[in-house]
Structures are given as structure tokens and as C-alpha cells.
Amino acid sequence: MPRTKTQTPQTDTQFHTSDSPVGKICFALIQTNFWVGDIAGNVKKMHALTLDAKNRGADIVIFPALALIGCPPEDLLLRPTLGERVREAMAKLAEIEGIVVILGYPHIDHHGTFNSAAILQGGSQKGFYHKQYLSNYGVFDERRYFQKGRNHVLFDYKGASIGLLICEDIWHDAPITALKNEGADMVVVINASPFEIGKQTARKQLLTKQSQTHQLPIVYVNTVGSQDDIVFDGGSLIVQADGSIAHEGSRFLNQLIMANYDVATQTFDTQSKAPLVLSEESEMYQALVVGLRDYVNRSGFKGVIVGLSGGIDSALTLCIAVDALGSDRVYAVMMPYEYTAQISLEDAEAQAARLNVSYTVCPIHDAVAGLRASLAPLLANSEPDVTEENLQARARGTILMALSNKFGHMVISTGNKSENAVGYATLYGDMVGGFDVLKDIYKTDVYRLANYRNRLEDNPVIPQRVIDRPPSAELRPEQTDQDSLPDYEVLDGILRMYIDEDLGYKAIVAAGFDPQTVERVLSLVDRAEYKRRQAAIGTKITKKSFGRDRRYPLVNGWSIKGDFA
Image (tube, rainbow, N blue to C red; front, side, top):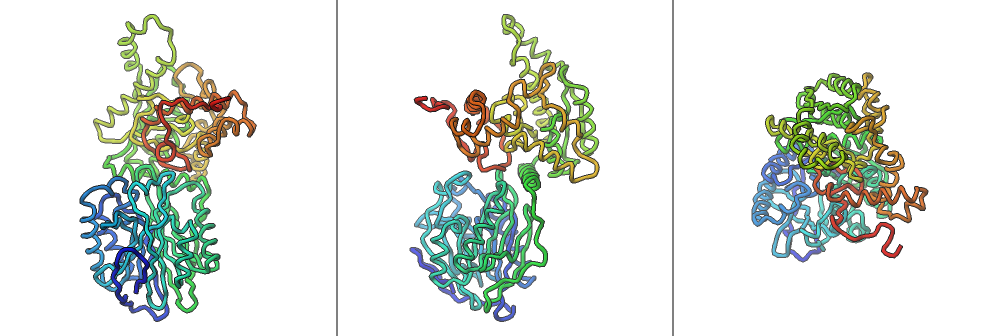
């Protein structure tokens, strides 16, 4: 039965046991994606998955954090009808007989709104647990919505005392210590833990440490899929009391994980075959595929349009789009002008043919000439500069958006994190689009991912010339990116320290970078904030993505070198 210390009364009811062998508990970990806001659809999905788990012999089925409403629900948590909808949904789920259901949901009562875990069984809700440590950093903003929980919950089932925690709770010592002191035999943690590079390694290290310290098995269930710019990568885990991993879920895939717990020995069985360990390039690439796929599909677009330039950014974007949606839903448009190199035309056509996508050539000469003619009286007394170059990018952006309006396909912009950081992009030009696949990918990582994707097949999907040739916007004769920017190895090194690590001018110079280059790059980053604020969203990969993680004022008097330098 549930045992709890809480400010809110809970029902104290004995659980019914299933027909599985005495002394054994069969757990079903549901690693899947739930659509934010679609409570009725999520209930239907959970109902079907619970019945499937029951038919496979499960005693207890576990869903991720906030599965009922999807994660992150953001200001949907403030809707006045949410409480009523949640109560109706929980009543439907509680109707399932013969199995215990643990799921994440928003609990609303006269004490406030809580990020909670429910225990359902035999027609009613037997108990609940409220998350104690509210995440309020990076992409998390839980204190805006939730009250802090103060109850410790355990429930007794077939001779085992099972404690409940949610997400951030397991990263702190107090909650699991309290459960151990109150007699827990194991801990179940439900999660909605977003992907970042290297996050799975950090999870394993954490769970190993906590299980060994407290001598408790830990069942860690994570969601998978994406919501807007956040990707959840699954990787659910069951860790024995000695810290060894008994079960690990696949990354980025829906999965039902069945695991048997021996009450007498307090150990889990072990999976026969662990999932493949993903390289950094592999997990980055899969995250980008999942992020684009779920965003396009749930936004209701028929397909996507990519402005294919013959450069590496659009080439990698096209590959990701095809892997996410299939070649029949991807449309490539090459928009040449007088500065477009012949090899750009050849390579774009070759890649489109290799990936079997629809490919159209739409020259922009007439569009640019029309814009120049309209502007001629206004610009007659000025010398040509970047203004004329940007007309090309804006003509291309207009064409892409017109095609999107006409045929119902979403435009994907192709800017990378390095370019977005320093403003090396044209607002209302190459920045147009509904989603920027490479938004959180530095240029040096673009090359890594292009080479990685080519290694997956005998016949490369990106022409080698695209990878080898110097990058260029092709807005003027013989132009290369390094005419305007430092070498990308240098640029990305500075950007990683300034953006991802939050280091300042002095620390970056002390790391060996040229002071003038550092000052220039940091100034470019700060001045480009207004562009980034208007840019399309894109999948979060690093710990400091533009948008949710890094929010700076557009207009400010901050000094890069220090106020009194």
C-alpha cells in the first residue's frame, strides 16, 4: 500500500497483485513520445500501451514525466480548464484492471499545480508524488508553473517497497536518502530529460553513483521524440544496487522494455543484448533527424523545401530532411545568380539525384534586376556594398516562401550556429524559414556530420567537392567566408568558450586566442542578437543553444572587455 508523508491526504488502499510468480515483479518501461496538449490522444495511447504490457505479463507499467500532457507543456499549464481535463483523463486511465500504472501528470488542487507521478490501480488513484527539486535553468522554467513538492512516497507491492522520484530529484541526494531511510527497496524515477551531447554518459554516471551510494536499484524511464526545438533521446535505464546496468533502452527510438525484479535478492534480470553505443556524430545526427521529423509532421506540413546552393550547409540539411521525412516529401530548389559557380550547379544537381528528391532550378537574375531597378533612384548616389549582395539572398528567400505558400511545404533554413552567432546571414533572406536544422551546429561540426553521413553508405550522399571546397556565400566574385570571418577552427573555438562556456574576453585571450580577433568576434556576437531573435527555431544540441538557453537584451551597454578596462 502507499506510504506517504505529505501535506495533502491520499487514499491508503491495498494493491491487487497479478498472476505472475510470487517474489517476482515484471516491470514494463514505456519509452515513447507524447504530444504536448493532446491529453485525449495521450490517454488513448497510454491505454493501448498498458494493455499491451499487461498481455506481455507486466505487473507495473511506467510512463515518463508529464506523459499525460506532454513535455514541455509551457503555458498550457496555465489554461483554466486544465484541472478538469486532467481529472477526466486520470479517471479513464484508472479503469484499466490487473496492472499498476505509474505516470507523470500535472496535479492541480487547492495547494497549487505540481509536477507529479500518479499510482493507478484497480479503478482508482492510489497515491501521488510531487516533484521536490524544480528545474529552473537552461530550457527549464518549472518555477513559473509548479509548486515544490514535500512528500516522500513509497508503495508496497508483492513484498517490495518502491519509492518514486521525478527527473531533477535524482540529481540531488536528499530525496533518495529520505526514501532509503524510510525503507525503500528500489527507486522508480520518471523523466523528461532533453538531449545534449554527452548527456547519456552523464546519466549513467549519476545513476551508478546514486545506486552504489544508497545500495538501491534504480528504474529510470525517459521520454523520446521532440517538441519544438527540444529533443528527448530515451536511453531509459535500470541500474542494480551495485551500480551495474541491467537494462538500457535504445536512443531516439520508441521502445517497450520488459524487466523482471527478484524481490528476495533485490536484483533485476539483465538484457541479453545492450543497444549500440552511439558516437558523438551519430547521436547529434539522430537528434537532428528526430527534431525535424516531429516538428514538420506535427505542424501539418506536406513536406519541406530546401534552398540547395551547392554548399555544405544546404547539402547536410538536405540529407537530414530526406532521412527524417523520406525523399518524396523533400523539394530542392537551386537559385543561381551570376556569381554562382558552375561546380555549385553541378554538385547540387548531383546530390538531388543521388537522394532522389524533386529538384528545380530557378534563376534569380530577373528578381534581383527588378529590385535594383526599383531602388535605383534611392541608391543612385551611393557605392555598391553589402546592400546589393543582400538583395540576392532576399530574392531567394522570397522565392522559397512563395513556393511554401503555394504548395504547403515548410521552408527549411540552412544557417549554422557559427554564422548565426556572428550575424553572417541575411535577415529576411537566407534566414527565412520555419525551422533551421543546423541552428545549434557549429560549422566545424557541419563538416564532421557531413563526413559521418557519407561513411554510412558506399555511395556518398554529399559530393566530396562540396566538403573539400572553401565555403562561400557566392554573393560576389571569388568570395569565401574567410574574407569576412576568421578560419572556422579559430572562430568556433572562440564561440564555444564565449557561448557554451560563458567565458569572457580575458579568459578567451588567456586560452591563446589573438586579442584583436577575440574582440572582433565577441562584438559580432553581441551585435547580432537582434537577428537571432527573429530567426527560425532549430533543434537544441549543445548546452547553450540560441533561444531557450541563451537570452540577452537586444539593446544594452555591456562592455566586452569590462566596464573599467
